[in-house]
Image 1 (cartoon, rainbow, N blue to C red):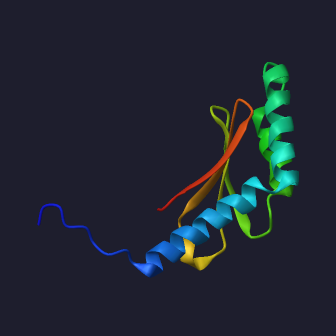
Image 2: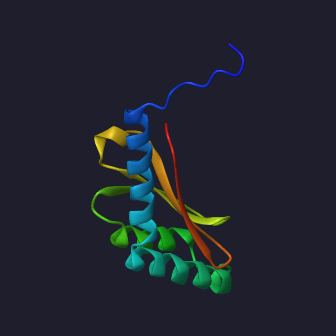
Length: 109
């Protein structure tokens, strides 16, 4: 049917809101974000002399226990993690820094 909209599914909406809350948890984690910002600034100054794997090793200890490291990317500077929350099995959460803006996002597997 053209123009027919399905009624919102409360379970899906609750899951989406929980995913947004997980993103906020990452973005609001000052230890994690401060380390990401520091590493980004340092990479801009030292990328010709330092191994990027050292940056990966430096970020891993500040990732909260309920998350697992997936990758650190240079452009845009971002950290991707998965969560131990079984409702989000396979979902990847990301904290990105673009200019002086920090954002959180997620994608389902």
